[in-house]
Image (cartoon, rainbow, N blue to C red; front, side):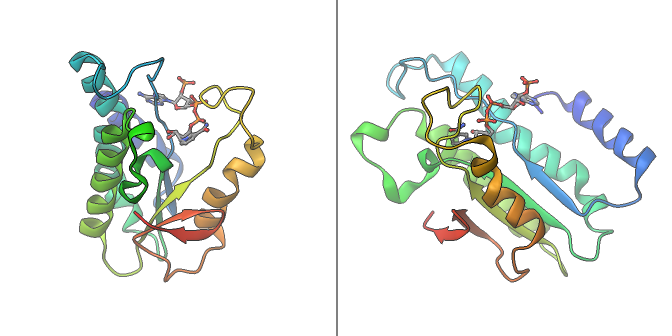
Length: 173
Ligand SMILES: NC(=O)c1ccc[n+]([C@@H]2O[C@H](COP(=O)([O-])OP(=O)(O)OC[C@H]3O[C@@H](n4cnc5c(N)ncnc54)[C@H](OP(=O)(O)O)[C@@H]3O)[C@@H](O)[C@H]2O)c1
């Protein structure tokens, strides 16, 4: 998602198998934490992170928008993190918060701008999940971590739009 050419290739591939897109989940993300904080992260690394976590989901959304608009009830879901929750700011959580927060804001704005007719846009938070990113000590299995995102993609009421969710419940931005 950090390569425009790769995004264009994905759009072309989807076009060969479907004439519309019902669900777009922006899930790809990196977390180049490794002991860094927002006070020590090198600018280059910050830029790379923004390319994946912020500009990537935005460009993917832009690229697939024509296909989402062909669906009667398209859903756009951006996966995020509690590190992006401005309401939860504290010194201990400073980390690379700005990156996550930037992604969330752009995702939200993209969703709002893309809104039209029946298009839904929502933001899901997984919790601490035992993936490569979360590591073996994380509290949630992959299945439990994916639950809210799958619910948003499938069963969640259509009027839940422009919101942020954890454990199938709305949480603050
Ligand atoms: N795990 C957690 O506890 C946790 C907590 C909060 C938020 N999240 C969020 O949940 C989402 C999924 O994370 P995860 O735990 O599944 O992380 P993960 O195990 O590190 O997997 C990340 C996925 O993103 C893909 N990816 C990374 N950079 C990409 C790029 N430039 N283009 C396309 N794909 C790219 C990776 O693909 P490759 O394998 O091909 O590199 C991989 O499939 C992320 O947005 C993350 O920020 C996770």
